[in-house]
Image (cartoon, rainbow, N blue to C red; front, side, top):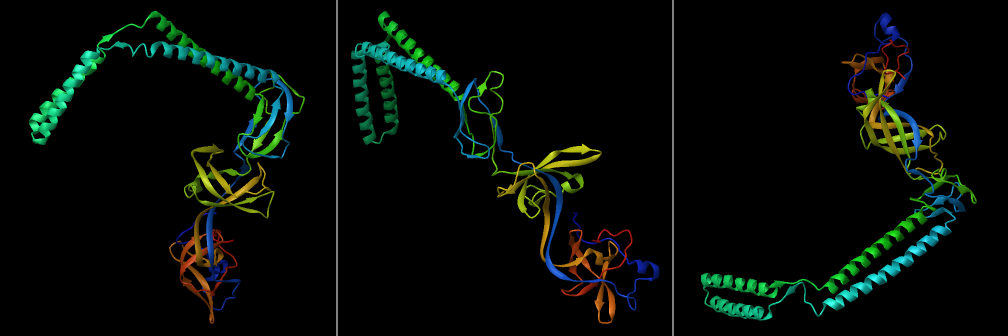
Length: 408
């Protein structure tokens, strides 16, 4: 359908071409009543339904299929186990790795405790402290604090600032005395440090082995990554999964709660289509069902086929039900404009020219030509802005010139 606003094309009766446009004593043909209603203009697009949220699940390792815990058509939840391989050797590897990790944790804790017990309290750090010099510097700092307080009481800001600078210097001196001389740790302590580092590295390696064993065990299990339906189950219990086949799909999972329609829109209509516009969808397989949707994607890249340019457009369906299937043929009417509670007449009644449309109205004396102002058109009916009243009758010409795009 096309959107027509304003004036309409010239249409005349076949009889008017032959003998004038007067309707006085001529025989009047069909007529239509001016009605009031809603008018919707849209762009049609055809395509197919698709469930975009889908995935093929497979094992990540070889082995014999021990359990298949889902059947085709079953609803599944995220995190649900759908199938598993016989993975006794992988489980044993994980238990072994966990035991090694426990041992490494114990070794590291013992080494760390030995190092701490050796260093503290025998050593205070990596420095030899000049304790007398530190105490002397701190006593000088305390005297400076008392002097600063006396100056503060006298509100002598300049002398107090100078005294604070002296105090800061004394504190720096105390720090230097505390870490006056750097000393090398004894060889025995250094060896303990190396043993502790070695134990920590062994623990990290054991943790990596546990993570690797868990990952290998997870490859023997198929878990649903989202809520959905098992569309296909392609494995059987007792089946051997080899290095050549373990990556093949085992379960095909789809999410029927999210359905979209993909179609192509002609370049002539694409300018009137916008994201978020409503759409009314009908299905070839379910002719009595009407669905709602919204435009969520309009491609910027055009597709050229046989010289015709079109653009891919996606419409997401709202509240799809269980009757809908992936791949169904569908037609959508994207609503590009809408008028509510307006005067409407059939397009067949419109005559005149683009600049001066008119209709033939039935009156008591016969008919009269009346100019009208037109608005939106859906190709079958047109909105009347002025010139007609509700319930008036307009004549539908029996024949029209070929220039008759307003006819039904």
